[in-house]
Image (tube, rainbow, N blue to C red; front, side, top):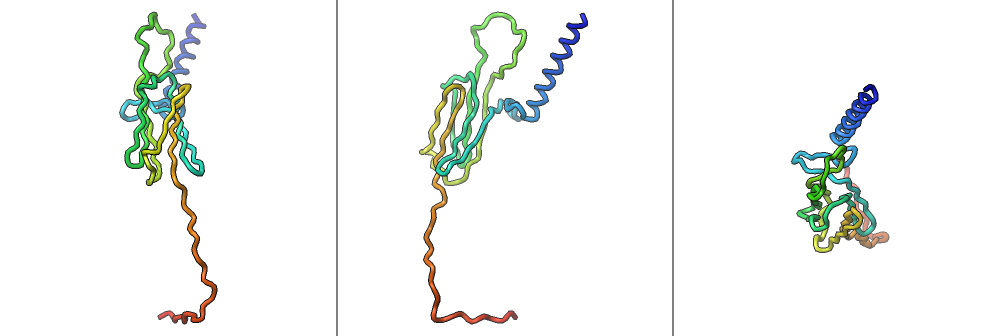
Length: 153
C-alpha cells in the first residue's frame, strides 16, 4: 500500500514538473495561445545563409508546410495519433497535434531561393542572403584649397 502511494505521488510530481516546464517553454513542446504545439527550433547564420532547423519527430512529411510572408518564415506540421493502435495507454507523453513556429528574418530575403529538407524528424530550411557589400570609397589626398573654419555664433 505504501509503495503504491509513493508511486502515485512520484507520478504526480513528474506530471507537475513536466507541465510546469511546458508552461515556461523549457521543453520546447508547449502550447501557444492558439493551442498549437511549439517545435524546438534553432537558427544559425553563416556568411551566406540562415539555417533554421526544427524538431518534428514522427511527423508525416506530407503535412509539413513552410511559408515565407514579408520577413516571417513559418513552419507548420501535424502529428496525428495512430488510429490502428489497440489497448489501453498506461503512460502517454507524446505530443500530438499541430506544430507551428515562426522566425522573423531581415528584410531583403528572396523567397524563391529558400530550400527545405525533412530527414530523420528534423526539418532544415536554408535561407540564402547577400551579406553587406563592400564598397571602395576613393580617398582624395590633400587639396590646394582648404576650407576656412567658421567661428561659432
